[in-house]
View 1 (tube, rainbow, N blue to C red):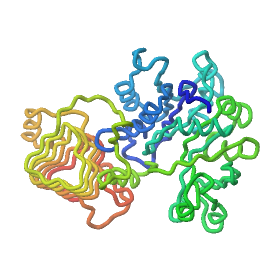
View 2 (cartoon, helix red, strand yellow; view 1 turned 180 degrees about the horizontal axis):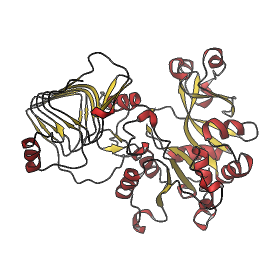
View 3 (cartoon, rainbow, N blue to C red; view 1 turned 90 degrees about the vertical axis):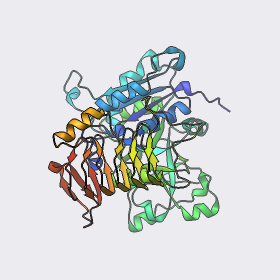
View 4 (cartoon, helix red, strand yellow; view 1 turned 135 degrees about the horizontal axis):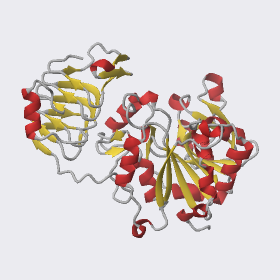
Length: 442
């Protein structure tokens, strides 16, 4: 039994593309910096999984709107002190231009992003690294990466892919894999339908599912979480497929013929937070009893930045199936099946239902609030007598009094950015820093 040595593993967290499907949450922030669960950001999930797995060498590759992500990483994961992290590091690597013609290109995809920084893995700092873990910055799950790496090492695989067993209803939304009876990956199919989908059925008992469960979930989907032998990874990127830009759709399918690629079973909660609808549903799922994913686990906590906020102050409210984050002020309101983010202000007689409120980055003082009201302006938070349903409220939004946001006409898509909101997949999104005036009806 090879000993588990996380020091020989480096993790690369991919910051993701422009995040157009998560717009407007990604208008001014990278996908991994999008807030989730009231007090966290998406990047906290893979970062905490790394810390809880003992992996202390982490690179985060970013290209779009990375200011808030870099700020959060510096505040939350400052491993500068040698005492707490030994030889570890957490470094954000932004897309950069280098000398020469090829150096003028931005990252063209996930694989290209890693390729452009290949030189980092050739220095003395990386001499002990054996395996490279490739992670995504926009998934919600809790996983011990060293179990995954260990499985990869014991099997002797060149590449191991963490995979999810899934049923018929969701299978065609994913990249599926065909495996043999040893768990070796033979072929891939990207979002297959009809007969192509049926052809991808596999016996998932091979990966350790019980017979009953294997019948219910006869497909395995790639989670976009990979571990590569270091030498194989850079051989593939630089020499074997120097023009392939993406791991999931190009490099890995093309490697299946000549390299040993293995599937590793992850049979637990996992959600890709790639769209407004999935973001909305994953947040509200945290309010279930018991939730399928909980940020609270004493042995494997999810870390985030220390904000030193006071506990929330709640006066005369009725709160049902909701999460209220710290530093909030709630007065005589009804909050039902909602997530309320840090530093939120919810005033008298507000009704908030099925809503994800991301909170605020700062407080307004009582005098600032009084001044804003005297000038006919709207303070940060939600004004009195306002009713809100099925909504995502981005940070620092100013929602006035007697506002109604409930999309009663069930509009699916609408772009009203000039008025401070959009509707995506039926969910109303109030944009960051926007103002919704008193008496508005959406």
